[in-house]
Every structure is written in C-alpha cells, then in structure tokens.
Image 1: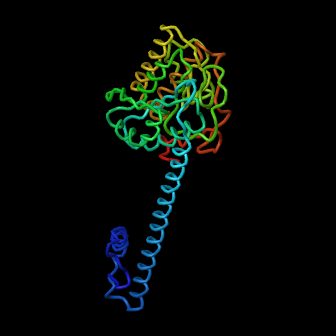
Image 2: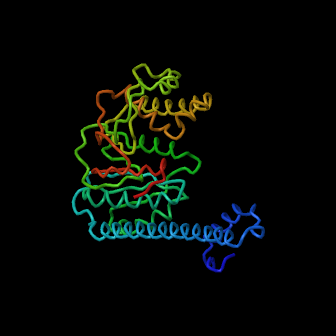
Image 3: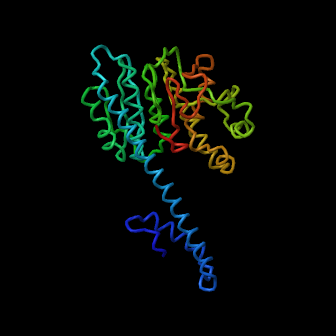
Amino acid sequence: MPKHVQTHNQPHLVVCWLEINDQFSHLNLSDRPSSTNHALLYGVGSSLRRMKSKYCFRQVKKVAILFKRRIISLKFNLLIKSVSGKIECESHVLVSKRPIYAQVAKICIESFCFYNKDKNVVVHTDLHTHSAMQTHVSGLIKKGRVRVVCDQNDNSTWQEQKIFLICQLVGTKDLFMDADLKWNSKLPSIYGITFFVNEFSLDEHYDFRQFLMCLKTMNRPLGSMKNTSFFTWHGKTPANSEVETLEMVYRSLLIESRLNPELATKLDLVRISEQLALSIWVEQFFQDEVYFLKVSDGLKDGSFVESSYFGATGSRF
C-alpha cells in the first residue's frame, strides 16, 4: 500500500482500499514502467481521498440532522404546558413492531401537543416498543400530556393493529394519526368522518378494479383510495353489523391477496390492506359524509401537517 494512503483507525478506508485493490488486481505492475505505476497509484490515492471526502460529508450531515432534531425536541418540551382546562379529545398513535418507530413518533407527538393545547396523546405499543416509547416521551408523560399503554398483540400485523384500533374509536371524537406525521400548526375544524387526504379513484384504476371485483359485499362504486395517516369518526357510530362488515372486507382482501399473489405484489396490497379496506367500506355506509384533512399532499410538503412516509420511504424529520 502506498505510504501516502493512511488507513489506520479508518475502517471505511480499508474497505475502500480493498474494493479498489480488487479492481486493479488483474494488473501486473511489475511489467509496467514506473511512471505508469505511479499514475495508477496516484489514481488509487485520489479515489480514496474522494471516498473519504464523501464519507466525511455524510457524517457531518448526519450530525447536523441529529442536532436539528435535538433542538426542535428541546423547544417543544420546554414550551409544552400541562393542560389546565378540559381535554376536548385524545389522539391515538400506534407504535409497534420496531423500536425505531418510537424515535419517529417522538416528533409527531411533541409537535401535536405543542400546537394542540387542548388535546392529549395516547400511544399504543407492544412489547417491542413500550420501553423505548416511554423513554422518548418521558417529559410529556410527567406533564400529563401523553399516556403510553402496552395493549397491542405481538402476533397481529401492524395493519391488523391499526384497523382494530380505529374500530375501537367508533362513536368518539378521538383522532388516529400515524407516527411519521409532523404538525406545523393547529388541527383545523373537523366536520365528520375525516381521512388524511384523497389519493386516487379506485374505479378508474384498472388493476385495483380487477382485484376488487372479488368483493361481493361491495354493491356500490369503489370510490377512491383514502389515506389513513389521519382518521377520525368524529362521533359517528356505525351499527355493529357495519363494523363487522369492515372487518370482513379486510379479511377478504387478505384472502384474495393470497389467491392472486402476482397482482397483490404489484399493488403492494398487503402493506396497504387496512387503508384499502377502510376506503371501500366507507363508500358503502358513509359515502356522503366523508371529509379530508388536506386537499393535497406530498412528502414533507411543509403544510400544517406533513408526513415523511417513513414506512414506505425510510425518510424522517
């Protein structure tokens, strides 16, 4: 290894060197003029320096992002007050399966409590996330703004956990929100059953229409795909039979996904199963009573509430 290439205490450069060395292993440098060898080695050194520069940039960027998160969190925790008056409603957040979701949910919960002083948060966890979630929101727990409950079945998928949690909120004005949201303003007025945003028409989407032809319970047009990053019944109370129909629709989607795996994979149906089930069910029973929190949405769009879509993109605030 050339003397000017230092790899001591820099394992990332050792990896880079091995990768470059592998690229040049077919060359017999002893048969080449020394000037050629020097040129080749200079090129190797330059490559390593560029890789080191990129590595350092990534590390600096990572530290800067962490510092920004700490500052934002500190601001929220210092300024969030205990609720002195009557609690209007509670907002429910599902944090299960992976402890990293406790970190993701921290900014969602802190920002929501900061801008919505008359609402508290209930975090629903399982054995994988309970301890981490308690640690991340310990300050808000002490102020009485957050409760963390370990009430989720480890054997259930997160989609099952989510749709059953939403069903538990029937008849209340409580809210459900995904852990990867960030609030930049107060929750606007709610007028009825409300989803996060309207995404696209299911009737006009050929693949979804073909797949959903199997659902005999649907006797109306399919309507639209509705984003469930936010949801509230706003006091609506479907009959028990109607709620049972929602659970049946969800189960039917999973069964058909197994029977038609190619199309299910293409549409990513298992991942969005709870969203799709709720979208087409509400069209049958509450078609004219559905509202949307946002007119349009984009990844980290900077509006009054935004989503990083962590589950789909891995992106975080």
